Amino acid sequence: PISVSPTNRWFKIPDDEKGYKLDLFCVPKHYEEDLDQVIIPHGLIMDRTERLARDIVRDMGGHHIVALCVLKGGYTFFADLLDYIKALNQNSDKSVPLTVDFIRLKSYCNDQSTNIVKVIGGDELSTLTGKNVLIVEDIVETGRTMETLLSLLSECNPKMVKVVSLLVKRTPRSSGYRPDYIGFEVPDLFLVGYALDYNEYFRDLSHICILNENAKEKYKV
Ligand code: IMP
Ligand code: MG
Image (cartoon, rainbow, N blue to C red; front, side):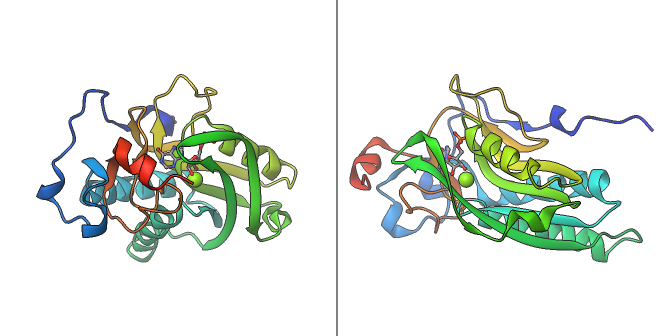
């Protein structure tokens, strides 16, 4: 069979994308003043996630998968992606056992990625030895968080490691790192919603939206 690199397909959101007016969608009242535009509506996130699930099962479906959620930002995407993988598992003749694990990393303060990536919590990574690991992340910006996690993981000798990130930012600050599976490639803006946060706010927003400058000041720490 011809092997197709999974990375050559993603949904590209161009730099001049205008997005959608907030009042076309349901947005929590407490965030109405803080957001410029909806850039990825929740329904579109779900549709793209369904397809990522299919691609992942096609490529990794032969063996037990340990899905490793990068907290906190990855939790919504993780839950939805796993629901779609479960649906594939229970509706086809081929199925793959799925177990879950969680790790918490922190690299951000306000809207800036810092150079220090801290691991705060999660199981012993040594439980991943010999396993096929699928790392599930919300967004890759510089790539440092993922590169740090991958080098930590490699010390535990997993059998295979694949990374799926819902979003990848087009930015000159990128180290060049690209995940194996990408949901959307997005402009170099600070995005919130669908578990992406600004100082812990906006995880309780379903759509991915552009944060405005006032809000960056308002929720600054
Ligand atoms: P990196 O290490 O620069 O690739 O940053 C990755 C982490 O920064 C992600 O896991 C997010 O937690 C956070 N991050 C980067 N860009 C954004 C954004 O636009 N909104 C919210 N969080 C972000
Ligand atoms: Mg993250």
